[in-house]
Image (cartoon, rainbow, N blue to C red):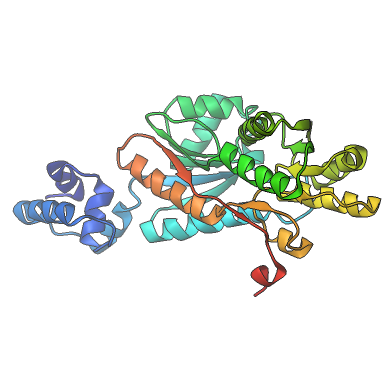
Length: 329
């Protein structure tokens, strides 16, 4: 009896590709459809409807590994957008996904972590919020046991893709716009966490701008915390011409500190979260489409599960000043 696996092997494609052809998915090329259907007819394969549905998931269950931001009491909009984007694309691809939080695995050894994912029938992991301190997770990625897609981490391997905006360029762009508009020379730059990959990339952008414009830049780590950014601005902001923040939450904290000190300094952020719209249109920020980034990560995961190699995907960013009218429904 001919199976869908036999068809896939004869046609030289993945089982999930055969399933997509049989279920008339739109994202399959005409050449592939023709090749698969020729094999189906030649071998006399009769698809079972239930089996065809399951075969699209036969490449394995995928985990969305999320690190929640515990530095703020604000709702973590970014993670919600990530999850929404991933689930929407996974539903389109008939991919089985589950959400796992870092806190569930952070104290596991490599062996324990591997067993845990295997026990959940996981074959692919999309990782959001990984830091340099997540050494066991890095070992897991390098072991190639699972297909992985990392968000905002500069790592590509045979079984690993990365998806991100150009963090250094985006930080350079938004800081330059703010500094040029206000003729600033002395800058307080509030960076993210010391162990963050995005922190390093964004620092690269601000340092490039410092050299290009001959700026005086004081760099302090705000750990993506609104409170810490507020305190840093209270301490250093008065003697600076502007405050450049590596996240919108920190920009909001910096702006509130300046208001409390009753002084004006231009402030810019990074991310483009909805909360910036409530602050007003006076702050430049980098808008990242987190749902689109996550959707693209799911597409990359499908590609990896189909047997292709990892690659680096750079997503677009834009500079905006969010208005209240743009965020209300």
